[in-house]
Length: 136
Length: 113
Image (tube, rainbow over all chains, first blue to last red; front, side, top):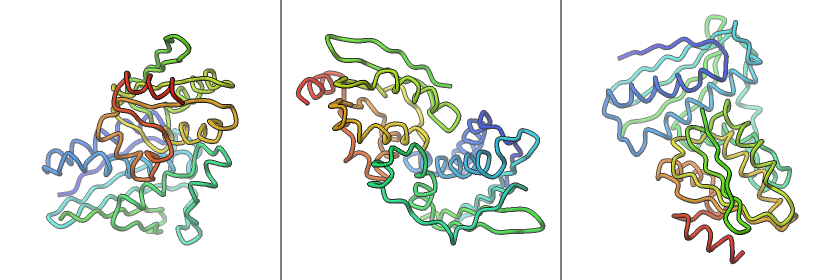
């Protein structure tokens, strides 16, 4: 089953993204205890894309597509903003972040801990972030 | 999206955070924390009505960890729902911050630290 949501690139819309993901997980009987983490991972990617790739420009759009099947859930978040190169991402150390009093920098770390696979791709002129969570 | 109530008991500042802390609302939490995080402050944060926290919210609490020693501050979080605590646990922040189950424990801890 495929579900889609389009939103403008405004941080205010993150709540709508979370509600959308939450509803789909509930409809498909995804375990309650795990659903918050999956919602968090999608929220983190959408927040990064809205803020860093699209500079919170409400004229830009994000599309979230969820492909829910028996073995896995695949989340694809696509946009036309500045792309992200995962190969250049270096995991920050918690010690460094704390010492530097950094307020950001752990979003992608959370996503990597939660999801089973993360890919950033270019497809038909769009940037696509594909997150996969296996269903055990 | 979030509401923060500030009160105090004896010399302890109590912040009660209600709602969902995400990339949009974390600025409110940060502003409130920056006002109360002064030299020698004892702060306890009631998260019993916090329904959600993202990295932006974690980042606010993380950014005060080094102040705890530098400014001789005390910061105790308490009352988290399991799903919120899990988010702190993913990055091991539950080991770097003081987290208690309820207000009584938090006050006791803040008084002792």
